[in-house]
Length: 100
Length: 266
Figure (tube, chains in turn brown, yellow):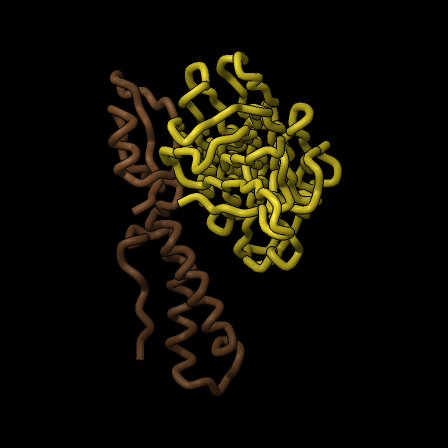
């Protein structure tokens, strides 16, 4: 299977930051290598949770502006909790929950 | 597996060419003279709320003519483009492409383009060419990354944007796209990526990505929507990405490298 690889020297120094190759080719031609990890794709929990928080606020925006929307009082409380969440000690581990 | 194109028609001798995008050991399928074009991987762009930068292009190198036989063998390493950057930080440097083998002195290298730099004081450096000139190996450094991605240069050092129009840099290679390449000439795209703002992830309709060998465009958001700067074309750098809130920002990918082998008439 073709993939990406980081090529290193005996001292562990990177000699080529990223190549595309099948593993058999890499093993045959390089003594020191490792699979390339897409570290820049890693997103912290704070980032993903804040994105979720923003989506929730967008989803409930209409409800907050419509007086007879079902469960509106709880939605307004929920939205306030969403806004306060990033600054609280519950962030990002425990999401606010919409009451019924 | 290399992609073979070219030749055909008229019943005369054909002169195939091989677009190699995955590292491999390559054995010439027939005797003859070949031209080898090598491009490293382009750098991806930096992401920042105030300071950001485009990725640089990789180096381009060429052996204009090399006699080969089916008894020969070449080790071809293809550098990948730098991965996209998600969240604040510098871009990712592209990989080096190298060639070595029968009739070539040592290993010939086209360095990958540096990832975009989150600094107003520095630009990402273009990849450099290195190796013995014994077989006529020569080439040029890639274009630096400023705001948008740098371009691959095949007749001179690669171009970069001027910082005033935010358009990805354009290659000096003949236009038409890389598939128009043949008989010792490599072709590139006609334009670098355009810039985009507040496109909520749909910036591709603004043609923000660079065409072959051309740099990617820059992206900006002021309203908290997902923004992606333009990918670099083959071997080229990606654009930088800027916005008020880092959670929405992503740079483009640097263009992957390639090795193009062309059989030559005569």
